[in-house]
Image (cartoon, rainbow, N blue to C red):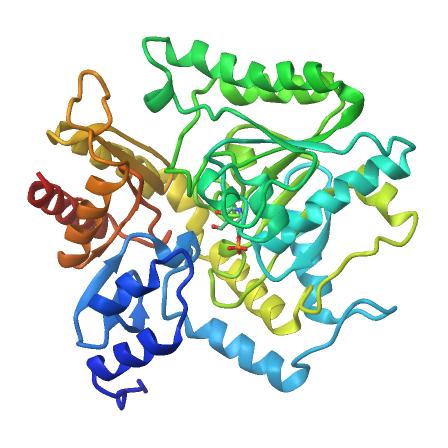
Length: 451
Ligand code: PLP
């Protein structure tokens, strides 16, 4: 049964404008035009309050990996809510969903990533990581080893800690970030920053910025390096193949912990359970959220290797959240992982839809506005440019053309996102080949209308 007795759209929009503060939004401007109100969804399609249907090529916010409308997850939530809606795991107790989910994640995660510290999302999990790596080195007798190196244009969350890890200047400018002892190096974005260099040499040079930063600070001051395997919210920046092997070498040689932020890349997005496996990385800690529950319930966490867990576990770690391992969210996540596994959804991205998207997406590079079209598995981006040969940015303020393109997508009932003048997709992993074609058709139409 569906809920159909909503007030008319104009009334909903007026309430929204009067009372709802939207994240990452100029609210007064949105109030002028009114938000599009989404009322239900199924598979890869959303329905708005006027009954229009849109393809959601962003899977919500990169999270609805199994697609919308999987009632098994609703049932898992209802069952768990009836049985045990809440309990904490702080004071010598545990509960079945949290321990089962931790065990399942230990089984799926590569190598000796066998221990899970839960949070309600990715920002909280990255805050955990900041405290965990510093506490780890302190317990090993090196309290000065506390600097965390991250990358410009990275996104690691929106709390003070996680946004400090992130490299978004616009976020840092509001509210006093980064917090102390977090520093940033450049991203491996060859398209925008590589000039005439060879992409592989550029990848190595960007990785060596990490080595230079460690040399500048002293390895005895650096606790960890954090990065997304493929930068997502920064615009789906696929690193040159040379990048990750060099980063791995540098972290190992200088005794720096490696944190892979798998909030987007995890749970099948780029064709393996974790992005780290796609790049043959063995991190000490992985941040997870989003696809862990396919967004059906808020849950995230840190998957931690044996050695870090052992050192941390030797005393009390003064850290935790009321909703760490929330039983309903954990039950939903377990059901989500069962579906991903039983329906071989990750395998399908690897063998079928990922390669299919690579081929189909590349055709967008023929469009006069598109400077590059790249993907890794089912995350993809195009860079908009007025001059393909020079990979030039637009003269207008960054994001002006991207915003127009995004609005044209919206008008064509396609949800795509723009990051500056890059357009990105990250569809539900269950998307069919036909729907991939439909996404590209609508995107092309939107680009034609943007010209
Ligand atoms: N890390 C990455 C790579 C993300 O993309 C995000 C969210 O987009 C986060 C962390 C923050 O997660 P959350 O919004 O669940 O706090």
